Image (tube, rainbow, N blue to C red):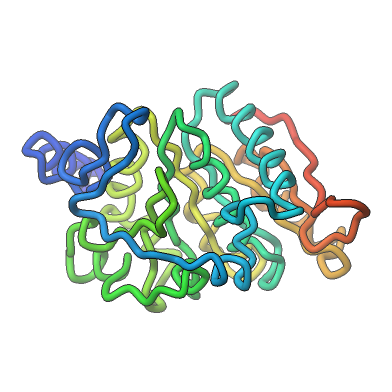
Length: 279
């Protein structure tokens, strides 16, 4: 606990000097406080993502007029309702097993959240075993969160914006050894605290590894306000879903998304809310 306290104090001192770990905002990341004037970036790299790439990689929430876009708007609204009711600003996305679509759900949710002009969104790839968020934007970062952890690179050198206003991504780059230990390390805890508290208008979306594949998501659970579970239609069993929820019984799970479900006329998946309170 002493190491964590010192790391948090150092992050606070850095922020006071204007050299904090995060570069999204008035200092030093270049995002003006008045969102009505639009967003400009001075430190965060802007990556132009062609519309065709978004279509091919199923970034539905970013494609104007897409027939399934409303499904993510509905998910966004339900998530925002839960977060506002509880005064939360962070949500982590996970699922029982690999292949359920939790990363794609995290990306589309972050994009949809960023469409609202009242806040900014930071999408953080914390699947340290298999970071892949950047791949959906056809972008290969020169540095990622592993470089923050082991090379002590400042976070503003890692961030990029995928040409979507009010959305910034903190990517992974390579597999991180001892990932569950790193997710609760003092340096990671200090980073997460900084990301969650630096700007009052920010929402943070974390992409986590699957629950039943490793203990990473459980290790990180104390540092997020809430979690969203993603299940795969026709593949995720009720037993695995229940096991995953049992593992997270001490964490507010705000709902379950049934991904890859086939429903008529524009439906895409199914969201079931679950009212929970943080303990």
